[in-house]
Length: 204
Image (cartoon, rainbow, N blue to C red; front, side, top):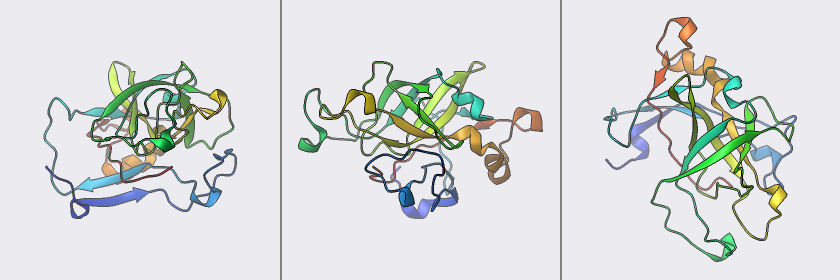
């Protein structure tokens, strides 16, 4: 089913919020340092399939504790090895999957967390913003983060600078509960959520 703006209603989005603690990326001005977490309502329900599945939502930010391994999904660029990203264009129609790990090295707001490839190669590239990162928690696939920013895997960049920043879904658990009725298990509601990852444009 093709997507159009008319079929989506934005219930909650993070805009015009400046970080107080976060060390911003060198190419991102603080005034634009928002995250890509959003709650949307679809005009038409999605049908479950092999590629559209139910997932849980992180109950709190403990889900993104340092060392947590995540599976990340995105539609962004995937630069060939040894070729700077600025010199190449790619077909971004295929959903990519990578593995990343939460780490704590930089001071961030509570609603962010950092992650990177354990092999120290950045995974995310332009177009990946809004993609979801998930972990298996208590035996269930759980949405832990939404990608916001990254340094693309570019050979001209220093290895140590390669990192990603994700919106911490667990930080918004109360908002999710209020807006959708999908609340923590302790609240008596079922925590399952049909989570849709939509890349809306070029974010970094």
